[in-house]
Length: 494
RNA sequence: UCCUAAGUAGCUCAGCUGGUUAGAGCAUCUGACUGUUAAUCAGAGGGUCCCUGGUUCGAGCCCAGGCUUGGGAGCCA
Image (cartoon, rainbow, N blue to C red):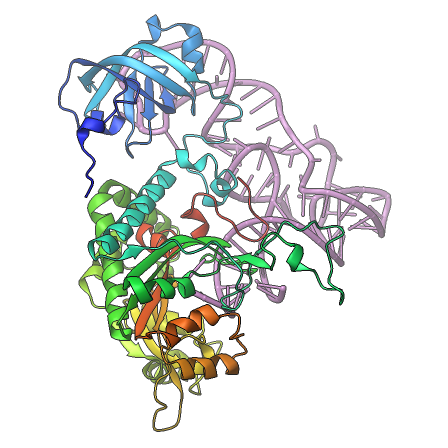
């Protein structure tokens, strides 16, 4: 086993103290050097400086009488500066300490007439248009710190449990999964595309000698790994070419997909619930400042909403509530019964009324269950077979002959489906029958079926939409604001 | 893709029944002030009214088509 030790540590950073460290420091009247970006310059005298290490700014006190005019003029919002000075207890209110500058160097100017960020509140829509600069704002600083923490927590969680982090392919030749429209990967020219005799595109001429796409899921490959390594997870980019224009879909997003051998649906649900709670707790423990900021930001937003649309909980209350309570677990059939008897259904307030078993649940129904009826995360299981994927394990038909599969969806308030998973169909004959019924080409997926041919075993897994988790923890409402560079229809800027 | 709302100064928005020179706050610039907290005060500059076409004596406003964005739905994670 190899351990990183301090003997390899290299002091690579050029003589600067991080603002996060300075703000915690109690050692005053000493010299320090800081570098950062100017947030505001007030009164020709006070610079609010931020280097990204902390939510809070460091106040720099400029001796304007003894600072050259051309330096003063260049201390503008957005400029990068280096400040040498003395760290002192603050004379003013509002901050504990400040740096009395003895020397200021402009590292990078920022034309105040052109720099789009101002010391004021900007709309999220506007910031989305300048996604390359929105990192400079408090809100996005907080969001991406939380995103980072959640990402690390996921690896920590699985690593502690002995899961193997498996890198499943990003380019895949199988388009048989049926998880959505795919982006094609090709090196064929658009003009004079090679054609076969019957006039179709000749993919034998293409880079891989066959048609290829970006992955929509690493699950099938993940199962191959689990059936040897025991417990694996993937955490990587996923691509869907769906023309989705919503606050919870992206064309490029990150997904976590664990797959566990010798596990059933019960184990699967337990793993998912534990993972979600672990990561949320990790964020609370490691991003206190960020979550406090996001919490008050959300409270501010809520004030502008009409009373009946306001949330009764703060962000922190919502997160803690989620940790302290078990997720409600029930079957699709039980959910249908609840929905049938529900007020909005009786009063015909649902756009899609529930009258029969077998229909897929619309988001209005999911929202009712999660936000009105149970008021906490809900795990729905055992959906009708005909609305779910081919690889899900078939249950015995019930006394009325209704066919269900061992699927589970975890629904979160305000987000909808956070997790989708199932126990997998490990019985070769049943799987093959199902594939035939659903027109999935068996020949192409021979490698997947081989796991059922050679030492098949019960196993289960799920997919967790990473950005949806970040949405929930940050209290943001649009998924395009929790990924650095969102890709969605008609937009791949930056 | 469908439903719906919107697009006016760098940002947020107002703009009457179609009428003459399109406004405000913030930001920017200039000056004042100098222990400020999105500093304050005074003044100045700043417009392809999303694009294309049409109706009209006259269009930011009306009509048609398109583009983009927000919200909702579908597809899903």
